[in-house]
Image (cartoon, rainbow, N blue to C red; front, side, top):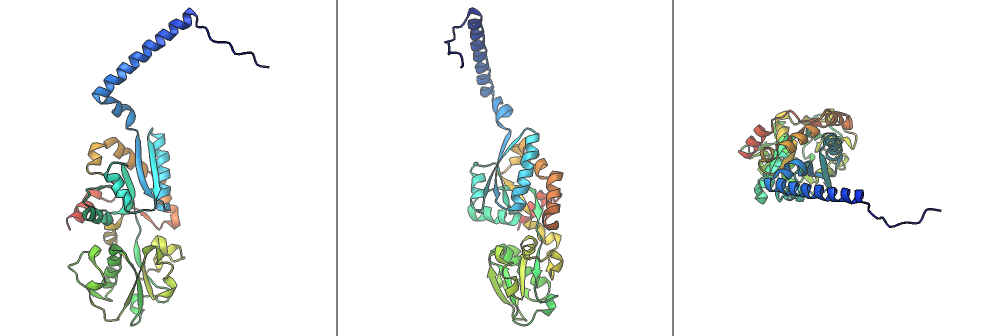
Length: 304
């Protein structure tokens, strides 16, 4: 049976220790107040966490979890929130609710800024996912028959990418003055084979693969129906794909205002472990874009 509880009666020594602790606590509080007044507490204690809002999808989520472990080893805390929304992440960063987001490509970010009056900036590239045109039945675009059905993503930017590839292949002619993100079937000036365009959600191109003559799709999505990039009838070049590389974005001048956060974040996301993950995912269908020049690409994108 346990001994009965006895009220603690402080001795003179204990009382002295108590007084010392109180004095020390008062001194610490005074020091903390002084540091706060000088703005040093934030620099010393509050700036070791980074909040990020991320697409709930393997090529975004898995590298984020790897980066989170890397940052923990360096004394940082990465606080991710995973979502499926493609609108709110930009507002959440713009209003300061999160430091950065990871869900969009360069072109989407540029257009979102224009459409919604924001000024977010990409701070570094993550990966590219080369799209192309695929066909279950035909081995070349030249074999496509008159009236062939071609599935294109319904969203404007990717719709234009498919149209541009068909034009590069010589199947159609387009208004060359239009930027790719503005291209639509209405900008086709000549369609000698009377191609029929069927617009679908980009995530659904794999599901219609067997039902149309050709589809424009991303390697990752085509791989889900066991179609590999080497089967593409035509695929984007590196330069064509660059404006659509996935980025991590932040408020304007994040790199200048938060250099330690930026450097820690970049090192974690561009770590060898993340590179290896992309190399193993779906047999390396996604290409890390770590060495791509984000500033030059953003300048070119925003000057259009």
